[in-house]
Image (tube, rainbow, N blue to C red; front, side, top):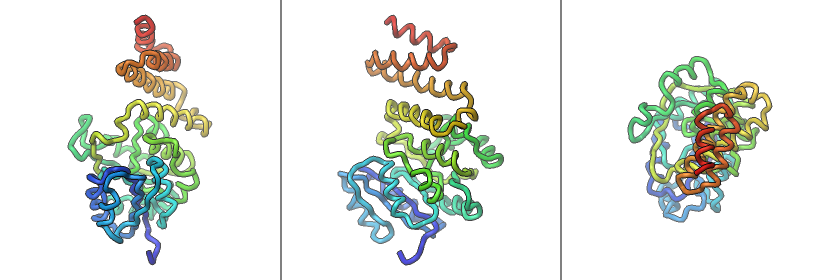
Length: 299
């Protein structure tokens, strides 16, 4: 490339050749065109390479041995030329206004670590709403700013709807390569604790639900979510004071409760009892957790 693009779009993919073309087409059809597109093939065993060859010089293709999505994203950022990074999943779609909207804000606010926006569901309304972030919440975030409690309570950040300063990304060490599902939440926490984060009330991507979504692995999602919260509290002592002991305990306890229910359903009785004990320990006054613990101990 003969010049430096404003934005580097990173797509990490693994065995999604059937969905990848539509994703890449949605990026190539952006109204904002001052970008490069880097696709990192994380060791795919399907015909991903052949599919990507069809796009020719419109993309930069990188291949690596399968190392997980976080490692693939980090590899893409290392090769990125742009000052701003847009990280896209290989199964979702960018809205035509994606880069136009986010870069339009970022260029006027160069000291922000990240600006993110809303998304909608490709298949129609989910959870009684059309957008991932509820409209009232979206308006509030845009008007009053993003707080740590916003990130913590609902895990609202989707990197498919974000633009990240490459400098800020590198300053916090990029993605945690030990995480395979909750890496977006972990990165959002670390960016927020180090630099300003902003929000724009716009829909900029479309989320595709399908059987291949990594987030459908509930056991891994919940255990990683717990790890990410514990990591936040360990690395940033002020986070616990801002969030409050009750809020932290309630969120952790609920995740242990969900773990316990899933494990019991799968016949993992000892593991289920261990998880419900953790929930009851965190919320000792919760009648529900105490009853579950007693019932599962007896039966």
